[in-house]
Length: 385
Image 1 (cartoon, one colour):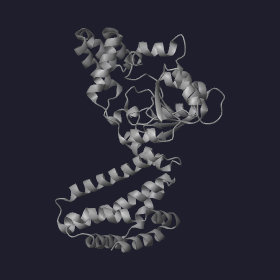
Image 2 (cartoon, helix red, strand yellow):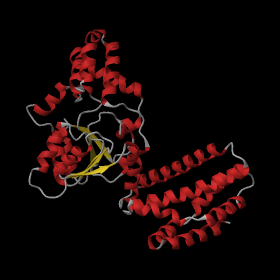
Image 3 (cartoon, helix red, strand yellow):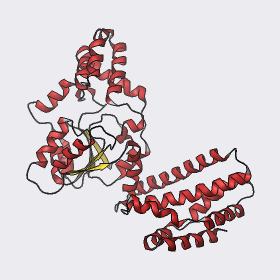
Image 4 (cartoon, helix red, strand yellow):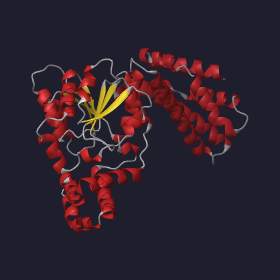
């Protein structure tokens, strides 16, 4: 989720940290070769440890804050959607403040792994929802878990951190959704293993995995052994998936309703903007053909998205094209002409027509009989003329 907001992957983040660290303390330059070779081996915790040891705890913390300040991360709509959904708690290993910035009321309270209040909050039904920062956050960089030494203290300290007790509690309560979580990170996976092997019944949770990952089969096998169901989503599919999850939610707060409406408007504006840009140089006739074609394609895409949520398979979805015929193309062109005074208004006229269609009627017709859907679309477009 941090990367989605303009953040960096861990290796790139450590490179920025080293560059900024040299500015803070030029002596770090002495370790450049060691740092680069360690990073090349993908020993990220050890690479962070090199900087932590040379800069000291205070200098390391100041450098982390400076890098995040320079990145100037801002929450995306998906971050707002994530905190607006009806979770009991959210646990993150990220130490940025993106999720906190999306909540302006008292519906969420943020606690780090050291805060003894964390467990009390999840056990108190009257308390706000909990945002648990399992690796600390930018408010107190002395307690951030980033280097090898930090992880060792986190896992092998004299007492188990309060946040870890809270995580164990959450994992045992019911299904969890793991999103953007490194399932091979031992500090998280060890606790999942404890719950999965504890003898409790039922599923531990669901995990979003990248289908393009090099070790996909082994990752999915490892998750299934822990009673976690994998959900295959590429990075650019996560945000639309979150919105589909929100659309299906039975418990929609006013905030979530506003977020969904804003997202729909933003998508419509984006689609229309792209459409207008593509059509600027076209002649009047070509323009009309293109607008009609793109509008019919938009109808298909909307039907496809809704039916995908209802469990339709790819082979079933591929047959949707038969719902649209040449007659619809001609009807749509007439409707656009009737609603336009000049070619420059074609796209906005098409957008209004699209907004006025009864997709619910179309969906019901498609589910019963695709030839019936063809007739329903004909009626809808005829109304628009």
